Length: 181
Image 1 (cartoon, rainbow, N blue to C red):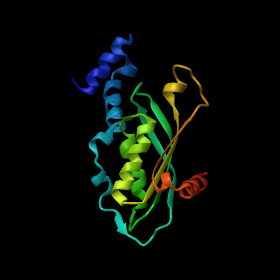
Image 2: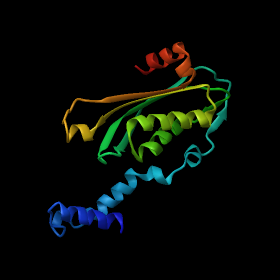
Image 3: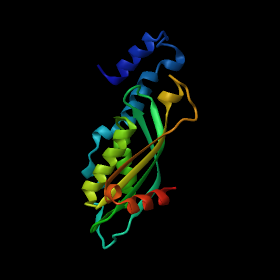
Image 4: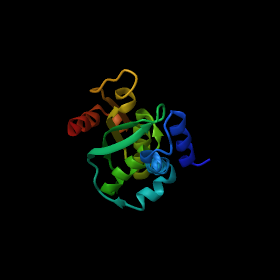
């Protein structure tokens, strides 16, 4: 059964007329949207990085802030929307700037929980760059909490993952936190 036919069945099951003018093409459109929103499953880190790893003598912290992200919670399949901040301390290699956003997108475009998303991004960047420390902070609003359940419109969630020097060295961690604010 295709995604499109599943959406057709869902729409009919909730009591809508699937032949109604505004809904006739909805299963096709929602299937395409779902394929886009979950395209991270079709990607892998090597293709995303695409060789954009460069030799460098840089050994001071690099911070990329405010990378927008859109993901879907694995519990209710509703969006969470926010921003991601990434810091790393290079050790001979630096990653092309746009690759940070592409890595965030790859993992965000999978059914996720925010805690795991932050960890996947951090581990990936550490593995790719061989950096001595990586920090990832994600701030997001979850529609599963805003549109249903407790319906708290101003709530947000912040998660952080610190690896290597970012975890073990409080000065490095503090530097990252001050640069992100």
